[in-house]
Length: 165
Ligand SMILES: Nc1nc2c(ncn2[C@@H]2O[C@H](COP(=O)(O)OP(=O)(O)OP(=O)(O)O)[C@@H](O)[C@H]2O)c(=O)[nH]1
Ligand SMILES: [Mg+2]
Image 1 (cartoon, rainbow, N blue to C red):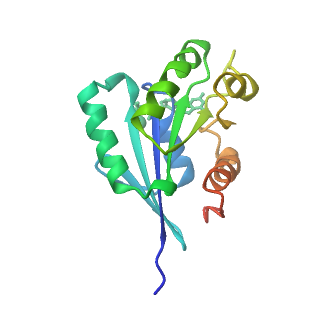
Image 2 (cartoon, rainbow, N blue to C red; image 1 turned 45 degrees about the horizontal axis):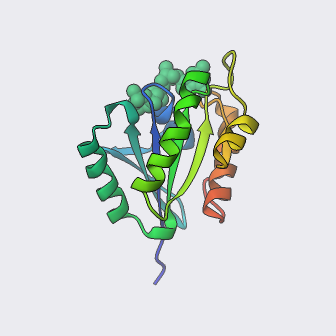
C-alpha cells in the first residue's frame, strides 16, 4: 500500500507579518480546517499550523505545542518563524529562537524574512548570522516568489516537496 509522507509546518510570528499570505502563496485553495490548513500533493500531505506570537499566553502555547508535537512525526515537523524583516521584529527573534527550541524539542527551525519588497528590511545574511538558522528572503504578495518558497521547503524537508506547479 502507498502511504503518503506526513509533513507538519508551523508558521509562527507576530500579527500581520504575512503567515496566511505564505500559506496562500503555496496553495491559494489551501483548505482551512479550523487552526490548520491542509495541502495535498501526490506523495506528501502537508498540515500547516498558524500561530500568532503576540496572542501567546503560556497556556495557549502549551496547548498549541502539545497538539503540534502529538500530531506530527518527529522528523517530519518544522517550525518556521515568520518576520516582516523590520528591525523591531527581527530583534525579537533571538529571544524567540531560544524559547521555541525549548518548547519544540527535536524540531527543525527556520526563518522566513518576509516583506522584502518594503523599505529598510533586514537581510537573510544578517538574520542567519544572528540566529544560525536557514533563512529565506521572501515577498509573499508576489506570485513569482512562489518558486523560492517551494525550493526552500524542499531544502528543509530534504526531499522533493511535490509543490511545483
Ligand atoms: N508589502 C508586503 N505586504 C505583505 C507581504 N506579505 C503579506 N503582506 C500583507 O500583510 C498583511 C498581513 O498579511 P497576513 O498574511 O494576513 O498576515 P498574518 O501573519 O497571517 O496575520 P495574522 O493572522 O493577523 O497574525 C496583508 O495585508 C498582506 O497582504 C509582503 O511580502 N509584502
Ligand atoms: Mg493570518
